[in-house]
Amino acid sequence: MVLTGIGLYLPYVAIHTTIFERLIAITRDRGNLGYLMYLADAFGYLGYPIFMFLIRFVVAKPDFLRLFCTTSLCMGLASLACILVAGLYFRGLQPRAASEIVVPAIAAVPSEEFAN
Image 1 (cartoon, rainbow, N blue to C red):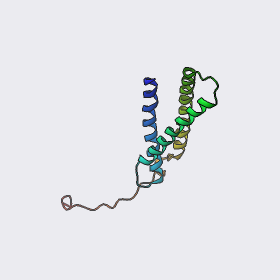
Image 2: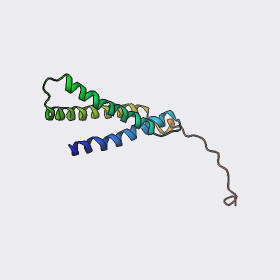
Image 3: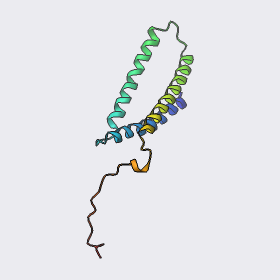
Image 4: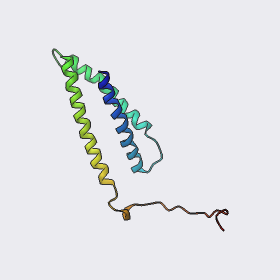
């Protein structure tokens, strides 16, 4: 279970930080990913009691090992699907050629040291 926890947490942090940073960059707003990570964590923490409630009252005789293995497999497949969808989405937003890249103009102020 510890290895499964590590295996779920490390990609969660790596992928979410990357995706959330890209979403913030697309909007060109100032900010960081703190609130988005908090929101994702909150929904994850909300999912656990809902999941336990459903297991307790919906399933007549739960087999927790089988449920753990099935849930782990489903989460892994769902994560791969989400990564593919996000990759396709961000790939579509990428400029196709160097001529399409928009670079903001920066006014160059000559320094007196280099004015010779």
